[in-house]
Image (cartoon, rainbow, N blue to C red):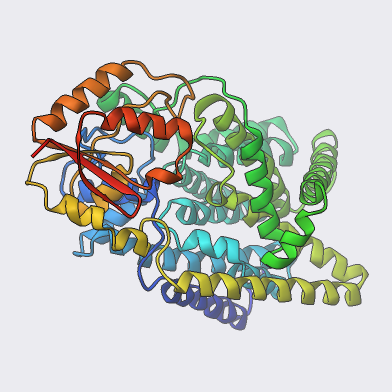
Length: 516
């Protein structure tokens, strides 16, 4: 295998540096922040303080098992330099975006043996507004994508190398897969993808079993160590419970809406096309069916005829990964976590694989119809650049999520900061309270568990305990964005606030304390 010219690496490096700069440019107020973001940041702070990986944003301060430690561990390592993890997320994700651009470019070159295809793939990631937005949020998905791409490359090199060096690359791929799992539990989809690929792409049972054995030898120690730790400190492996809860129509619509933004980033055009019934749903189904048929043809041909030429490895595992990942999140939604939705960050890894296959298909079309390929490329580039410009402008206007001025200038947060030291805070926004008051918070009693979708027990007892604590003068009840909640949630808030003193009420936020 000849090495790519230095000019190609230079171009990919410049695109990577551009991506890093653009993330920093788009986030002058810092990364976008959500509940999970605060969990990762608080977990990193707990690690830096020598307390272990704990729920430092909650008063319970239990060991974290719901979130793997990968992202928090990286933030904690950076935090050893003195940089707080809240600020560190901005630099980590900026560097990771650049690295992802570079790796994706190498994948495009390796997949097609075309330097131009590699540059095109890297550029498409750089100007994709949806994936750029994912990298400007303090979440684990960018790091997860990095480990996934690294695993892809090492896996492809395993099949391209000689027998002696191949084992090294297979072990490297398995280690990257383990790192992906320790960053997001969805890494099990990557594990399944590469496991099935070894089964299909190897021509003999001896090679299959040997490859699978080597692969698991690299993966299992990391996964076992994390699972053992969770069992020892929390008596559960991943804080998931097996309970059936079907995917809602609202969740499906959210997924279709996110997909439409990915393939058509111009909002005005997208709104018009949404007026056509099921337009984007049909496109989604057509894409999935086309990839499924392609994968089945390639896979079954190689499996049932081992002497046949194997499919191109990177394209094949990219498509297989789409279905493995979708199966992973669908099973999570229906069996383990009812709160999981088809949000942008959840489906982002699928978009990476779709970009890979878009360039692969474009390279194939280039061999048949150069003029058509050029026209389609110009259209895709134009739409991507226009959508990216809109995204960049929007992000530059201010912080996203908990980093927005709505929270930064919150008078309710200022009021909470005046409470006596040690005062307990019960709230519907525990992450935000921790972020802006530097105090761990207590979650509210609730009728339904958002993870299992089942009724919670001891609601009345929880309300009584909350009331007694607040009326003792040692706690407060803080409710944020009250009027925007649905009637059922507001009715719960009324029960929680009944009999308490309304000490603050502004900007749709309410704080209750003991009577003065």
